[in-house]
Length: 263
Ligand SMILES: [Zn+2]
Ligand SMILES: [Zn+2]
Image 1 (tube, helix red, strand yellow):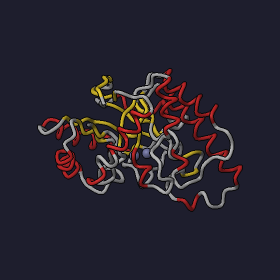
Image 2 (image 1 turned 180 degrees about the horizontal axis):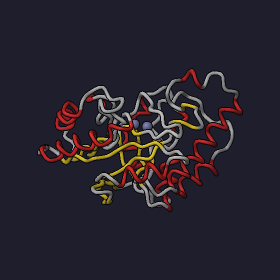
Image 3 (image 1 turned 120 degrees about the vertical axis):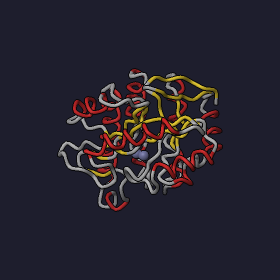
Image 4 (image 1 turned 90 degrees about the horizontal axis):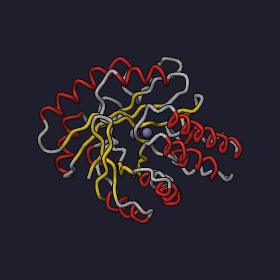
């Protein structure tokens, strides 16, 4: 068991790294990866749910110190970084400067629209505007994969979080995103946080997991934990879902190299 998508007080997590490490030991995981938010907005401004841009060195230094000390499990240095076409070159250079074990590529903001911040942003949108957000989001996920900068595709169908399902057929858009993820030799996360959101589904759906499996895309089960108690939330259910989709293994990362371990 691993838990790779986790947030500490460096970004919007509730607990500092030491408390999360203790919780990971208590949960009995083999590997615990920290992946705080890093958001290089085109405007250059900071967002309040990510670490300030100038804190990356301090974050990396603290996680590396704990990697040296930790004996209860393997601690991994990760990051959940947002993809923007305008800043991907700058982001890539900043990532290269540090010895990350893996980087999760996510899209939380689309042309200024905060996709998963609060349901109130979706309320004024018409049905066609909602569908446009979905299509734009999936196009960004393609761009994220095509950039070659990331190791794991984050919450593939995030716009469903508050229950705003598309009302047009997006199967070609999802297929294009999955094709790009496969071509980039990236893994996909099965993120259990969605079960605790209004949509009450994991990210992504069983149908999308089957499509990913069919393309040979490796899987990582994650909890998107923002608190110690969430580190392995819904894992038995996630393993069952992964198996139902045809998966028999999941990926682990060290030094941005991937190996697969039986589920
Ligand atoms: Zn995220
Ligand atoms: Zn996250």
